[in-house]
Image 1 (cartoon, helix red, strand yellow):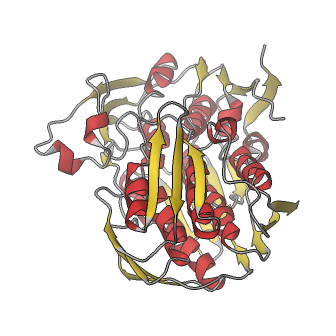
Image 2 (cartoon, one colour):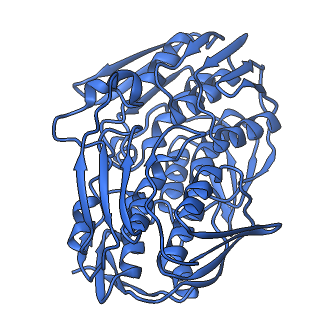
Length: 446
């Protein structure tokens, strides 16, 4: 049972120095184990991050009749047959990617009952784009408000052409997995283009699928009769790289991140260089370091290949140390600045506002009907701010890691509540920070 009552005690002021190896990408691992459910044969996945989200997904697979054998950071997944078609509300409440089990259940069992998924609350985060795509593939999907479940069934999935109204990472992956065993060809238009999706395509192709990316926004899937087992290694997590990079520069330190390349990081690296942060791309990793006063840089979050929405909270922490005024414009989620109140407790000078946008429905990637007058889509940050000790709470995964970074560069002793949320995406976060010189310890919350 996960301990959900822990906190970090952090004494700031230490420059982080040394080397660190990021875990395997969370956004690949969770989707890879869903893809493994498409075949009755074992699928071996290496470099799995030992994070709480992975264990939740593993428990769902076990409940559905599969096995997950974990040896160190290698997971062997096998689902000889599904013994259930329903995911419990309790399981789904912990993780958004639980909705992706619609695909293997429909492909192999032809019916599925899935609750409205949970995960970090970054706005409404509806799965309507996924549901529309599954219906186009030949499924019947109905949401029953009385029980809070999606009830889906099919007489057999069939290929189709489907255009996503808005870009969606999880929606693209869910339909990819479903189309793999559908009859005929499927063309996904306005598909997401993140490197993690190409990793999933690579895994599925290793299992015997026939998938190719025709253009950056079009993916073609030729359905096959069956898939087989394989072995696959997950690449490093881009979000961890950015977290450690910003922690290094903001703390006036020097950290080498092992085993990573610039793939998927170019947009971040360009913004960091513009801000005056130091970086050196080497053959076996990237060095990030402080080399002088930071300059303010405006960023706008966008689907890949843009500045990633998961980077905006750590970027906000970095910009509190820049000399001048910077702006972050969030376009992917309608409500992703909840951490700002916590940063302000620590002395950050930040104003939330809504920029003038001519065609909001076309400009923003979220469903505009889910927007609310109380939601703000941009933050104006004034620096440099002398952050001080504070007691803060974690609202979502990336914001939580960012508050830890803020505490590392603040004066005095800070307390970060909600360690279990950070544990959703960071393995042994405190221990790895300690090895870089951070003064951080984990304690039981009262």
